[in-house]
Image (tube, rainbow, N blue to C red; front, side):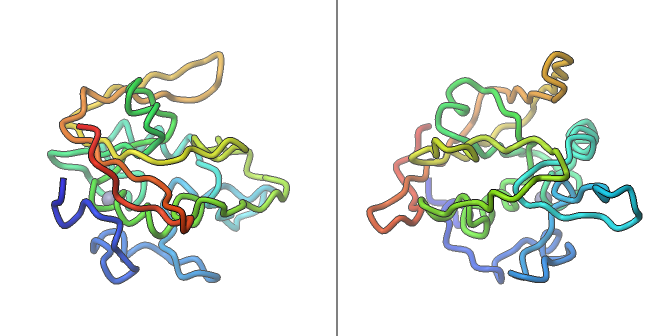
Length: 190
Ligand SMILES: [Zn+2]
C-alpha cells in the first residue's frame, strides 16, 4: 500500500490545490465539494450546503464529464471510489468518483467517515439529496478506497439515481475503526 497518499494522515494543509481552492464551510473550514451544494430549498437564489447529502444532478454531470466530485476538476489517469468494503467487492457505488488525492483527505476531514461514533444531525433534510452509503444507522466497520482507470454510469429510473460501476480496481486501500473510534489504515484488500 503505502504511497504517501494512502494513509489518512492529512490535515487541511495536505489538501490538493484544487480541493484547497474550493469555497469553505464557515463552521469547520472544510472545502465544500460541488456535489454538496444544493438549490435553495425555499426556491430562492441562495445555494444551500449540506455535507450529508449529494446533489445528484451535479454529481451525474460531473461523472459524465469525468470530473472529480470533490473538487470539480478533470480526472486524468486514475479515478477513486470511496465506500464500504462491500461496495468495493460488488463494484457498485451510489457516490460519484473523485481524484484519489481528493478522496484520501475525505477519510480524515469528513467527520462522518473519520469517527466511528459520530452522529449526523437528524434535522430535516430540505435538499432531499441521496444519503451517501453508510450514512444510515448501520455504520460500516471500515471503508475502502478503490482505485481504477474507468467506470460506467447507469441511471436507474426506478430509483431516480445513478449507480457507478468501476472497472476492476487496481488497488483497494482499506481502513478500519480502531478501539479509539478513529479510522486507521488496514492491510489492503488488493
Ligand atoms: Zn479532485
